[in-house]
Length: 112
Image (cartoon, one colour):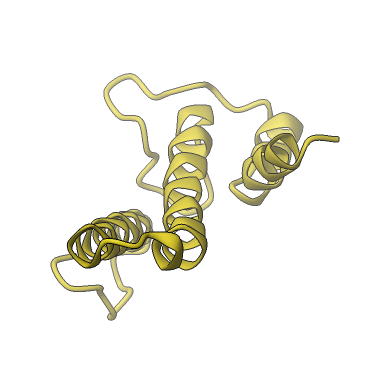
């Protein structure tokens, strides 16, 4: 099996696809894409979270494998900042969704 396909399947199941399949949840709510309750989840929420986890994972892989091979110092610095920013935005979004579902969660990540 192709590594990208394997990683896609892993991300899908980590974010709750099996829960959605077993519970037969709706794809989205009437006005929201993320359920505010912690015991409920929408199908669209699974895909959004998989995208956020995937963006964070891809940015870390590119940061560790691609950046050291760039010869130009300016380009390497720009790529480092870009990939690190993508990772931080994805991590902040994941924590933001978690805090949305669990309002009593006391910790945040920068602006969430």
